[in-house]
Length: 162
Image (cartoon, rainbow, N blue to C red; front, side):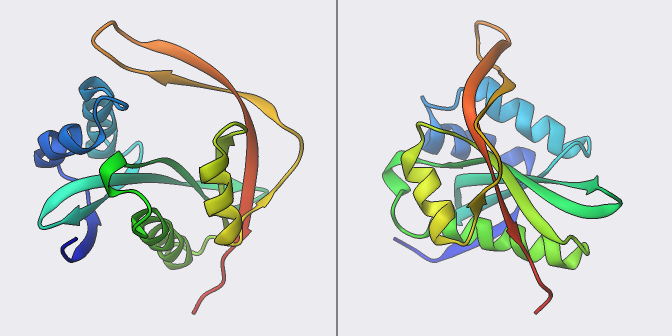
């Protein structure tokens, strides 16, 4: 594997992301994420290897009880690039962004059956907060938008300035 670089996503990353993440993540979903990033509804990072985008993570700065908090979501690594520390690097970058924006912590939702992701987050210091709940989100594909409902857990990690 070549050198890993992380930067803000660009619309020009669409084809590389489709190549790396498809067919699990449809091109319409990738395009919607990039559009949301361009319109300011999410911050989207990409991980590049050999200058090709092969993974993404998105985040939003939210307010909780008048304290900023970062929501991490849409963390996806192309199947052939997994288990190489790429997800770990993307999460670390989101945590750095959280500190730079004065957030007290990072939270995320993860499907209860996504044991690999839960294990990764636990290794990175995230802890489950509360009971499982039904998480609803929209998946986009060539068949149109589809509402996904999945049993999920909330996980949190405090972040401290370096």
